[in-house]
Length: 245
Image 1: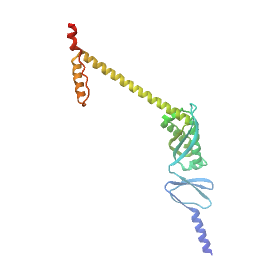
Image 2: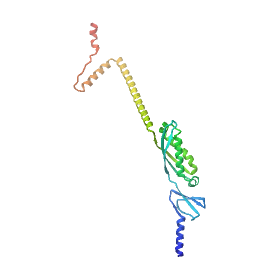
Image 3: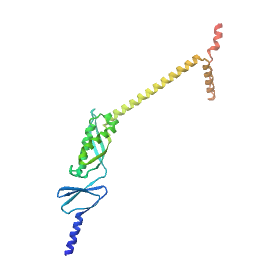
Image 4: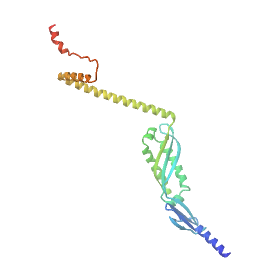
C-alpha cells in the first residue's frame, strides 16, 4: 500500500513539475506570484504548487481587423477592414504589462484604423494605400512597444463604398476616358494637319512632285482589279487653248 501511494505521489509530482515547451514557445515562470525568469524551449521543471507557468508563442500572428464604419475628411461614409501582422518580442511584458495582448492589440487596431482613415479624403485613401498602411503600422507599433509586441505589417484589405459613390466614380472614370480619347484624337488631327501643310509646301516648291503623286495613285488604283477609273486632266493642258481664245 505504501509503495502504491509513493508511486501515485511521484506521478503527481512529475505531472505537476515537468513542462515541455516547443521551439517557438517561452514560459514565464511565476513563483509565489512573482516573476523569476522566462524559460524555454525544451524541458522545464517547476516546483509544484509554488511555481506557475504561462506559455507565450513567439510566432508571427496574422490578425484580421473587422470592418469599421469610417467617415472620411470629405464626409464619405464607408467600411474599411485590414489585417495586421505582429509577434511577441518580450514575453515578460506581454504577460505583465497587459491583461490579454491579443485582445488589446485587436481593439487598438480597430480604433487606429477608424482614426487614420477619418483624417484623409476618399481619393487619398484609394490612391495612397501604401502611405496609409505605413502610418497605421507606425502608430500601432508605437503603442504596442511597451507590451513587448512588434507590429511588422498593416495592410488595408478592402474598402466598401456606398452604391451611390460607386456609380459616381464610374461616371467620373468614363468622363476621364472620353476626355483622354478626345485629347488624343485632337493631337492626331494636329499632327496630320502639320504633315499636310509640309506636303503642300513641298509641292508648291516642286510642282513635279504632284505629277509623280498622280502617277503613283493611278498605279495603286489599277492594282485593285477591274473598276471604273476617272482620269483627271491637268488644267495645264488647256492653258494654250485658253490663251488663244
